[in-house]
Image 1: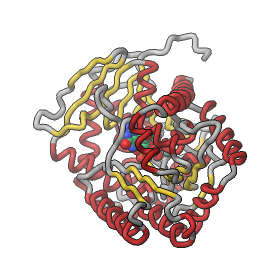
Image 2: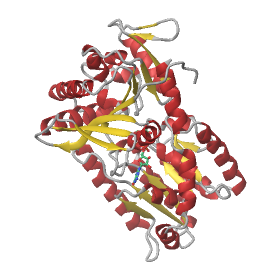
Image 3: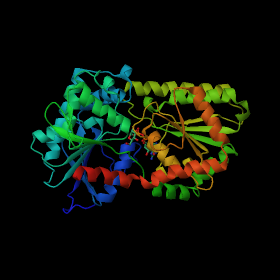
Image 4: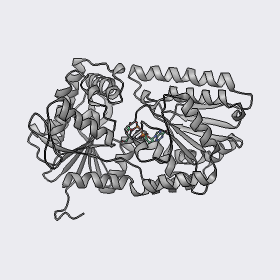
Amino acid sequence: MNHSKKPGRLVVVSNRVALPEQTATGGLASAMRVAMKERGGLWFGWSGKVSADAGAVKHVRDGTIDYATMDLTRADHDQFYAGFANRALWPLLHYRPDLVDYQREHLDAYFRVNALFADRLVDLLQPDDTLWVHDYHLIPLAERLRELGVTNRIGFFLHTPLPAAGLLIGLPQHRSLFEKLAAYDLVGLHTARDLRALEDYFLHEIGGAMRPGGRLRAPNGRSFRAGVFPISIETDLAAQTAREAASLEEIHQLRASLQGRALIIGVDRLDYSKGLPQRFKAYDHLLERAPQLHRQITFLQIAPPSRGSVPEYRQIRRELERAAGHINGKYAAPDWVPIRYVNQSFPHRLLAGYYRTARVALITPLRDGMNLVAKEYVACQDPKNPGVLVLSRFAGAAEELTDALLVNPADPAEVAQALERALDMPLRERRQRWRAMMDVLQKQDITAWCNSFLERLAA
Ligand code: GDG
């Protein structure tokens, strides 16, 4: 860095805050915890609690991090969080207009909660703070902060994909929402495809313009920069955690239970974007077409439930229970269960050990901003005997991890074929592919991600 001025405090704002004692099962929480650990600063957001005393800010200090959280009222939780954010924006951003449930009151609540966040945050700010706002819950936050007179640098990072502009304009009132991105100084996205969608939206759908130097100008007159910053993981730490996990009792137990069978693993929040029904179908297809693999393989799908207050999530949970039961009913033997389907979350050190035990990771989201599990799987492999990553082309990670076996998750035959190839892959090829992917992850780890975003924001 060649800034002459010492950077001020970092203020991270995200809907959920990963408080010190909580297990973080979401990608944003995993990543930002690392970013904050390195730099310290203020982390502001929702406590995750609903109460009548909403809006009062509570502070917790842990080392160099100051956590400031507030509760939401029941109505704000239902309309802002479960409503507009998770039943309109989340499906839209994941290319699922069919699942978008748009309600005007939910959009109003979304703006209301963003205004409340801004009102509370503004009292905590210092003049040289740099603000970094995260994700789709908080798109209008900067505009509101600007109205309140905040002139600090404010960056925004979108953790989801950004779909094609033609889909974005299907959202009623889309312009009242997306044009507000222009109040940020820098908007970060995971991939080049997401950036193209953003540019296309501003340039061709709402009448913005590209200014010299690559700044996007919105029709409201504000201009901002946008860039590609693929999020990553703590690569070296993940590798070390996985090495150490080998001696844990739980990992021995998993190994022993496999009785020499090859383990295929999937780890995903239980979410329709992760393509789990399609993945189960592909596994069924594999068992159907490759009877020689029966009793030779075990598929462990870990899927901690999330967003249980949203009906689509309860529905997919039921669907998967049925699908897993169906496959086990069809193929299981007295001494073999083809799928172990686990709706539970595990500490990271155990996940690391499970990843290292698995011969194949099967990660097939229909759409995913990045997918950190894919990166964690690679980082956790034994360099001498690494496993194979079967990865959806529609995960952001596929743009970097080009040595994975890339598949279209909607085609069970293609996925089954890739699984067969992965299970069969000679050691030499496994090592070559793993080395190439590990090189990417060592160069582009979470620290590099944070630094590159914050340097661009400061520039
Ligand atoms: C969003 C975007 C983007 C999972 N199960 C457990 C557990 N996890 C951890 C994983 C990983 C994280 O949660 C999941 O991250 P992903 O990236 O795979 O997916 P999302 O939660 O959907 O994250 C995504 C990400 O934000 C970052 O920008 O990549 O596209 O959708 O770190 O390890 N952690 C623990 N126990 C579990 O059972 N402790």
